[in-house]
Image 1 (cartoon, one colour):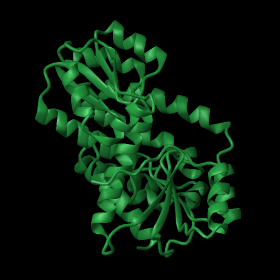
Image 2 (tube, rainbow, N blue to C red):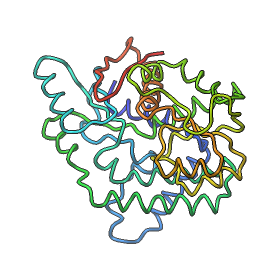
Image 3 (tube, rainbow, N blue to C red):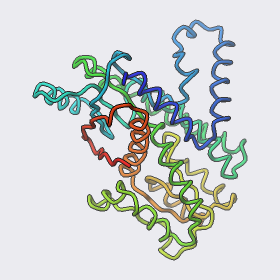
Image 4 (cartoon, one colour):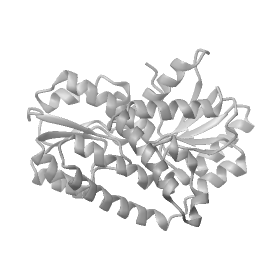
Length: 320
């Protein structure tokens, strides 16, 4: 399967599991094209036209010939220069590696990923937060993240890929959409009464079972086993955790429980202040879950039995 074909599957399936819904995604892509056509500045020539088809700035082919045939993929949650040096060592030792996939974005996918946070506006709105309030909250978050990225050297890993001539791709929101969609659907079907019911659900999946083995078990951060769930919001996509300003609106919108990958200290205090139950599923476990769901779809579309995956940097392949 060619690199471009793999990437197209990732984007298509990312859209199919987008918590905003396909219609909103299509509207967003159309709005980008309208803004581009209305732009008369000289900078227009630098615009990345892929943005008309790919809603996710943080999921990109960073380096490599798009016609590269791929059968062996080295996958890591974080891929940096040491992982590329490891890959080159393995290649020199006779191990075939056609492509490296990082979950967390690098290069252009990282320097522009703050744009992905905008999808949280519609996600929050679907949870009952008024759209005008969601816009103001999320736009403030986008500005903060953008300012933090500006000072960083975002091209180091891309340069390693080029110098070592190893195709490189990132798959961030396209994977996070999958774990969010999957767990929200399962929780809606289960209609759990108590928080322990959600923990029991998570314990059914190998990614979270592995998390237990390595000391990163899902746990209740706010509440207890027999706290009643109420409405459950699975918050695992959109580039980063929801801003703390959104927590008081969650309470107003009738959300009782948030299931998330992780939560900052500031957000924990805010959640407690607004009486929200919090379950932390685990960052790396949830990242693995999303990637594995995505890779399952990739293999189901492939005519050969399966791709070969080389696990590194926290990634564990669990095939369904």
